[in-house]
Image (cartoon, rainbow over all chains, first blue to last red; front, side):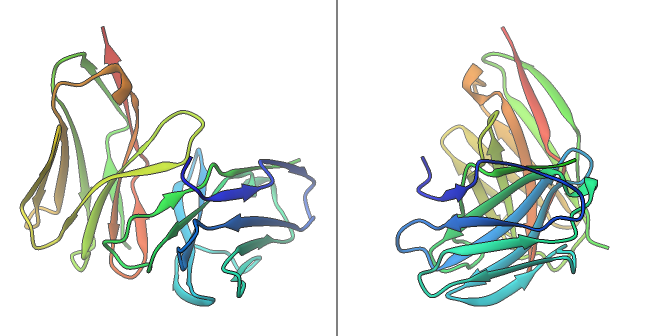
Length: 114
Length: 108
């Protein structure tokens, strides 16, 4: 158990819908990362937050948005869902978000878009 | 654009050494990482190396970096059945780019 929690564990929805994935970092960690893992694209870094502020941006679509709240939990919002958005979405947290900082991964949320 | 390439599959006998290779394109990468993903689980950071280092050893793990050729390798000595997993190479400058992962299969 990494100490990072993600909810829900599974999510099934229809195309065109909007969903919110939630992540609670390890106690004391200030930085949160979001990743998407799919069979065709592999593991893609989406976005990183540090203490409520966006720190780095990867391959995040405009239909997706994220934020980190004052209590440091984070939410990833996915809208106008397409079949290709079906994937495993991981959240990770680290203490200060620097390159040498170990990221601890949550168990993931499996999103299925029908 | 930036890219990280690794072979998709490696099969090794138990007790032998496993060598997983990776190439990357971004010469400004500051850190390079190896992650392990077991079935149904998230990623676990195994080790990392700074771009100004050539080698790093940590128990059974040895990381070699050839910065000129942009080649990174992970050697696992005395491979055990518990090493069976997918291993991801990743590079980081401001953002993190992962390879598609190498599935390590252990033969008895």
